[in-house]
Image (cartoon, rainbow, N blue to C red; front, side):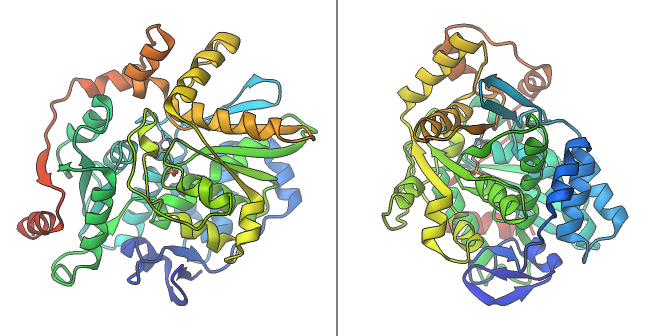
Length: 432
Ligand SMILES: *Cc1c(COP(=O)(O)O)cnc(C)c1O
């Protein structure tokens, strides 16, 4: 399988190059040249398969030209070490809980797959993985790559803009993981990482790659839990809508990849907080990146969603088709907390702020339709990851999972840095 750049369809590379480069040299995102379509009968049979068995089928369809059967099994087994239960919370409304991994957020799926695939493809080279994070990426990548030989991880995060728990998850590991605390916002971190990839002064001195969702090895495996969720819906279900709480739009783009690969999903709801660049686009405005705004769903505080061009590429650049398939909704912090309270009260279910945004989008979409839908919203983080906000909103104390509390025991180690590329370049050159 070849991978093309969203900026230039004629520029194609191998799987190994796509994974190790992360971003294409022309700054485009890599996409598989052709998307295999799974047969309806295979998708039907998934009802009887385990999550891992579904994983083998989907990953084999996408990667079997480049990986052996054993490698595919290894990858899937390493990635799917935890479940993603589909929990019904209201009639026709399901929460897909993606927070049962080591750092209690959905990014564990992509990070685990990515570290394993990189170690399969690296072939004794040394590589630096650069990660810009607004919170959960840092923890998932740090934990996914911790101790992986040949890989050094450098995490850039905006100082004071991630929760203490999130911060502890990537600043306390040490070893091959270094955290740079940037005096700025997430978009600064992302820009600094992008500049490093393009900097000729670093070329030849080090091998740099990314583990953000721009990297196909982070992005593609996220399609697995869409297949799994659909396979767990009740028999004879109606049309399916997925609502995805979106920041960089990697997660929803992976769902759309699943749909292109044959999974019968009628509609995607792109649910955001007030960083609503994509919902505005979907309503007919031009795509216009903006500075990010801080919210209580801070892992979605993204003003320039890097996977946007993947959404377009998945529909062959057809904007009308994209706008037909994906509906945008956005919510303020107060709407988000109201939803968390209302759902807790009426159903007993606790949502985190990100899941709550997706829940709101799903409900508003379903209410706008005449036909009944089966609605699935993605619960992307354990509520305990946003303990302060959730406890204050619900006015009750949360049961905290012990593996989350274990992170709090570690000592934070970070290196402060200006929101300026020169400073970052110096750091990278120094560490050669
Ligand atoms: C990263 C993250 C998101 C946004 O996912 P994207 O793939 O960037 O759209 C949503 N919720 C949580 C909890 C996250 O960590």
